[in-house]
Image (cartoon, rainbow, N blue to C red; front, side, top):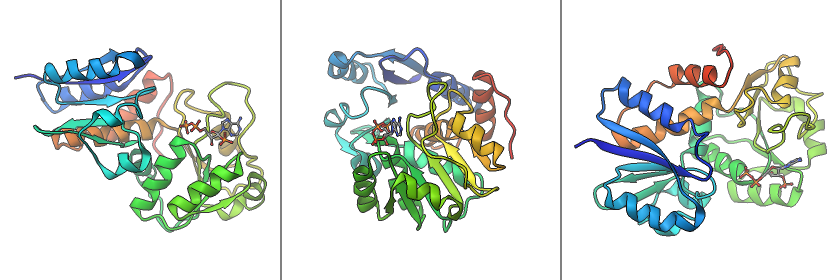
Length: 275
Ligand code: ATR
């Protein structure tokens, strides 16, 4: 029987996940469909019941349901427990198993750029996205992670939880040349004309500067990093790898991520150059 998968969210029409997963199903000759489903918060439980009744094999969860789905699931993987948030569900025949592939997706995207796990990493931000990445960096074996955030107390809390070090925004700007990898996780840069979360004046040329935002493809932060001769990485890689990890859980196949990054970049109006 044809299998079916979905992404649920509110809103959902902008999601690129259906394009990505249907392309991979086609490429690997898998008889399955992947649908975007608009689910309002008040309808989450009912919608999940309906999806189960109709035999769904797995699904992704986007805003605003990543946390509210947690109590509805039978089992959680460590990644989802640490985050208390789920973006992927896999039905194993008995349980609907929740995981969170966002942080691991980001880490795979930087590892694809040959980052050394001993690099000094500066994580900018201490919200949900930063938390997922800090936990995934730790799981992957990164040993030197410094966290900075506008609200310093949140940087301290995240550092204490993940074994990192917290510094203020000003200290991070002063010590910027020490870091080999910078990761921008705040929402600064989504709107045009916004200031940068930190000044990049002292960044070293050749530093890998990553932003989790992918729309716009180049945030003001990445533009500045490029002017400073850094290697820049937008959030398309994180998006594609979080999807690739979900796809592996569902099908056992590691899909072609390089080609997908190129396709998604083109869909977002950009030109992909692999450096
Ligand atoms: P998400 O789940 O997307 O990470 P979040 O949990 O609301 O969202 O976290 C947003 C992050 O962006 C936080 O690190 C926040 O800093 P504060 O902890 O000080 O709020 C950061 N952020 C948002 N707007 C910012 C701004 N204008 N300047 C600097 N940091 C900002």
